[in-house]
Length: 177
Image (cartoon, rainbow, N blue to C red; front, side, top):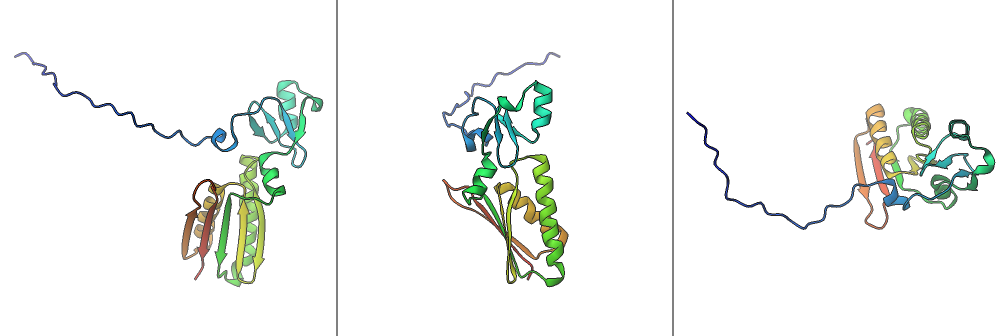
């Protein structure tokens, strides 16, 4: 018995709907600059269209000298200088017995984020009565920090609010009560 192949007479409908581009660094900061730069504040280096931690590694691997780099401010240091941020975590009703551990966790989390990417930073930590305000250079960093705090200290509730365009600030509120 021979199998018969039946061709469908239906035609495919093609749409002209344009899909949004995935979020990339160039969407946030524009196309990569030409040249090589060093941040005069933190020492991060811009080379091959990306920011890197160490001048020593880049210079050794690519045979570059300090004179090859133009001094500038990296995006994270510019945000700090201009008192800007992309993420904020507001922690409400902090039990006094966890306050010191909470601040230590935030600092440690910020150090690890910076180690992974020199543009991811905890900008400030300020304590006001029973409220802690943490600002970050990246909105995703704020959300990840809130998740870590909730897992570690068992906060009761988390609320994330993303501001509307053109702002891309994320405000994360954590509640212990």
